Length: 364
Ligand code: SF4
Image (cartoon, helix red, strand yellow):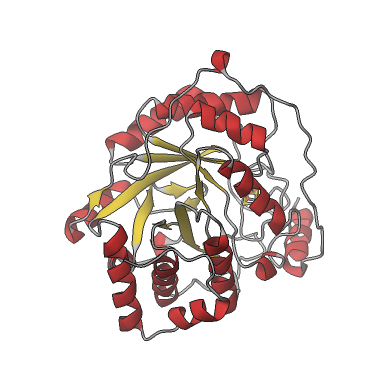
């Protein structure tokens, strides 16, 4: 049984990443079998519960208000709308619903109360509930946990060094602080990143070093391939090659043996053969639905056909950890504190972010 290590070095990880492919695949598949059922893949559904108008400047994101993209924004969905979508997702094999809101950070108030109600509602449908809402304080994480949240997603995105070339409106240390706040509860952590943003292999390894250092390590690590969207600073990035994706998944599996590795954005650019290689290399989750927040994703029926072809079974919920209890709002032990945390704002200049912003201004 491979051990969980928190002291991987960048050099060791790069060594793994660059192994001859057959050797890398064999090692990753062996470790995968020691810790997971290789024929089971979790199907998760990502719902954009509040789309667009985000004040952040993430260079890959069409939801940043400062760039000109053709996404349609929407206000926070109602609990009923979310419940209807969750039921549909459940009936097509999803065991997890991840709700994403284009916010810099969570603010106490009616919108957060509405999200808490969504969490209660989906947990009562016996599905794993995950939220990605930006930075959270300890008290907010506790309120989410009490509502029945199973996982909180907050990606590191890339290495600490390359992160600074993609985002200037919040610091890498805030990412770690949010993860730390989530860790003060029973909520599991989902944190990964994106490849294909122009980073070097060293940055991919650097991100994995940061994830492996976390103690405990994240229960879930999404690996996204950039979907370059017109109008964003990264619009001209070439699609990442399937071989890079397979190497990244395999390396993640080896250095994070117990973690659920999620094959996330970018699957529309992959063939079934490519995805099969990713599953062989240790990916054990996909996101279903024709949209991943705002970018295209394969249709769920196509995914189910692929599962049949490969003999894969959708994973049942709460395999890794027990279903959390839901505490109703009126019985909550944690009241809103109305905190105004000082999340950082480095605001250094990123040339391509600035250019995309100016281009958007000119188009308005
Ligand atoms: S990735 Fe999230 S925080 Fe960044 S601009 Fe998009 S919605 Fe906002």
